[in-house]
Structure formats: structure tokens, C-alpha cells
Image 1 (cartoon, helix red, strand yellow):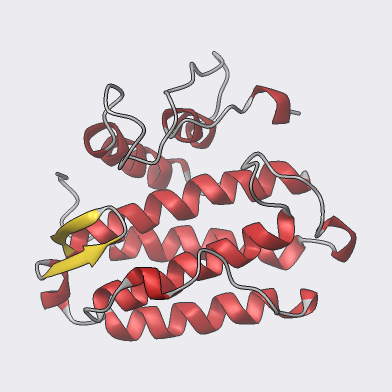
Image 2: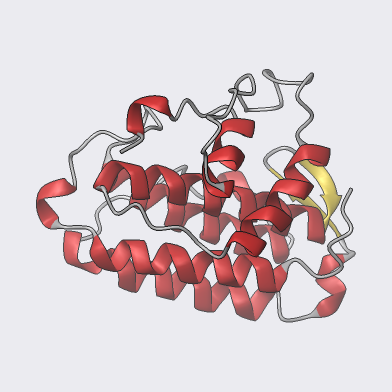
Length: 197
């Protein structure tokens, strides 16, 4: 599936970038729309935290669907602390190298642990793009990180197989000047044109 031997450092770096976004969201932006139409900014924050929690459950051999799609009931000034909490628990579960090759159950099916981490990586980056675009932050993670994730996405999320159990829309053609992150979002089926600044 991937030439990435250990995807955990990539996911760690992606979450570090997401953390910088969480730190900059303003209270008045919480109900603003996002490029992910089912989420406003508050729900998107809750979804990003929930994906980390689901990853922890996956790594510990549990059912990821036991974690809701997005976290609720968190005070608006506590989202960053929630993300930090989720990451601490995630890192503890995934600190064992053996988990990478263990068979785990993810929302998309059963596979090796490293595939689940790579799926979380794509979630963090694409939804991070959503959050960045929705809040006008226009910040991006390191291009090498995104290019590594994009190389994996092109192999693991084929353009011809979308919909049904593959919860991605049709690949969107990227603008000539699109950044690596926007191109990854486009590959994941995200329409980005209306959100470009």
C-alpha cells in the first residue's frame, strides 16, 4: 500500500500543524461554514478530535465506530486542550511498533495498523485544509509532509473507485497554482475553488 515504513512521525507532524490551527480559531468563527458541508467550524474541530480518538481505539483493538463522528459539549476555549488530550492517549497506544503490522479494524475495513495511521494522516491534512480555508488562516504544513501523504493517497484512494465504501468524491482538477495541500484536498474530492483567497 505504501513505501512509508513508519507513518507515525508524519501523522505527528500533521497533528502539530492542526494544533496551530486550533490555537488561532476565534470564538466568533465557531458557527462559520466550512468546505466540508456537514460541518461548521465547531463541528469540524469536534471531528478532528474524534478522528484522533477513533485512531486510539483502532490501535487498541476496539471498534472505532464506538466513538462518535464528532465530539460535542466542549467549551469553545477548550478545543485545543481536547486535541492535546486525544493525542496523548493516541501516542500511548501507538508507541508499540508491533501495532503497525497488527490487523486492526478501521471504519473502511480491516487492515494493518500502518494503513489506519495513513488514513488518519489524510483525515488530519484534508480536514486541516478545511479548517484553514474556513477561518482564513491560509497556513500549510511542510510541503514534504503533504507530498508524502499525497503519494500514499494516490495509491490507496484510486481515482476510479469512489463512493460507497470509499467515502471520497470524484477527484477535482486542481488549479495550476494550487499548493500541495490543496492538490491533496482535490484528490480527496474536495471542491476548493470557492475557498481560495
